[in-house]
Length: 317
Image 1 (cartoon, rainbow, N blue to C red):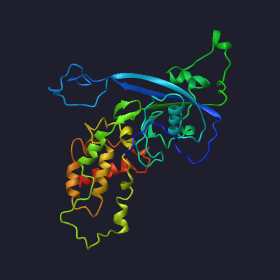
Image 2 (cartoon, rainbow, N blue to C red):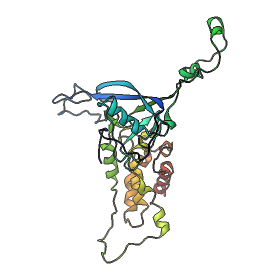
Image 3 (cartoon, one colour):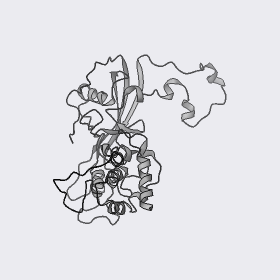
Image 4 (cartoon, one colour):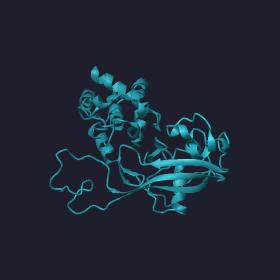
């Protein structure tokens, strides 16, 4: 999978007028340089004496700050285009990951306004929000206060919302995808997720050598059981939405279980029972709390929560 930080133009194919502006707030992170023989997460721990509590992808040490950028844009422009514009015109040190730019590779998953999604499919019009303090509508309620009356100096203040600034679409907050260890700015470490996917053998397994002269046919009904699951792009959006997943330790994660379900439901695979035994673990399907938050933002339209429930039923049977 290609990794880039926006050195070239992102081809959109159409001209978009930039008659409005938006404020992009990016959570920046620069890791601290590790010392020889020391753990990056614990400066007092030696690499030769591991912790008895195991290795957890915790909060890495480094510099953290929030940086704002103001750019000219339009409602239809993607947030990936906005970051590429910032990279070219304002801050070449901004780091983020992307590849195809069309929602097919899944490499650019981030958290936008508390919503895990892909940079290349999220548009400015969908996520730009005017803060309550800008409009005067609900600002006190957002801070936990309820206005009960107008006395003294308050009586001189005009009632009603403040007028919106002309040509300003609002603010977009962008942070790294939750549940993953940040490496730099918006780039996170996805190795643990792919390790969990590989743990459940994401490939066909047969007891005997296939006959090269014989076709392994399937009916349309058999194909429909796993066809949609094969569209998973392992973007990590479902894991960033899951309140249980945290680095793949206590829970293997919905992405790994979707990969397992794809082959459990494949009639050509001869190890379905073994696969069910593999996921029937404390950190496997038993750790799923059926919150179904994983289904809300899947870019491929997979009902991940329903698939988790189907795996629970299959294990119980």
